[in-house]
Amino acid sequence: MTDAQIPLFLNWSSGKDSSLALYYLLKDNRYEVRCLLTSMNSAHDRVSMHGLRRRLLEAQLKALNLPSKTIELPEVTDMETYGKKMKEAVRALRSEGLHYAAFGDIFLEDLRIYREQQLATEGIQALFPLWQRPTRELLEEFIDLGFKAVVICIDNSVLDERFLGRTLDRSFLNDLPTGVDPCGENGEYHTFCYDGPIFQEPIRFVQGERVYRSYPDPSGVEGQEKGFWFLDLLPA
Image 1 (cartoon, rainbow, N blue to C red):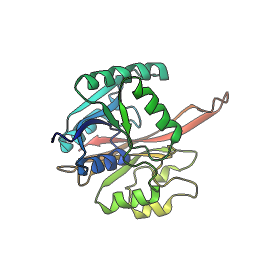
Image 2 (image 1 turned 90 degrees about the horizontal axis):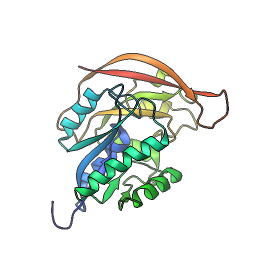
Image 3 (image 1 turned 120 degrees about the vertical axis):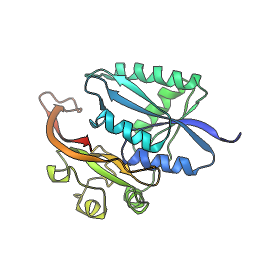
């Protein structure tokens, strides 16, 4: 690190957006990535966002050769609990001299404002390396750079089960239905990135069980549910 570099931590989901954000940050001489921060479901030892097993996350982090920390969340987490745990993690990182946090968000304005407001109370400034980039262009760049990712979670209301387990390539991009964001920025799908220019070696895995789960619809309409397909990946 040079005197001019800004140390920061990156909110790490293990998927394509955080991988591409990390790629940009590592190339930018203004910043030094000191930590990757991931939210975990402690009860199931899985990444909270999409259920990736902890062992595969650890293999991924080892291949990245960067320091990391986790936010350990209970099985059922409300926003109050999540906010409290996040503040604890942020304060610990701030005490280590990290006053900047980076995210892979692309265009969700409400989410950006929420992150900025929450972090500002802790003296942390938010950075968004991918902000307002055209999402088809981003996914094409991701593919062209040699990144590899597999779809491990889909919103069943917009994508059917056939998209689960597919590799992110141009065939996948061209098969997406009209109205689905190419990067899944609205939560249409989530991925696990297992190879690419930021990794020292590819992460080996095999595809396991497919599981369908439904949850109360976030719109708040009583009796309505939202369904998701999950793909369990197993360390090879």
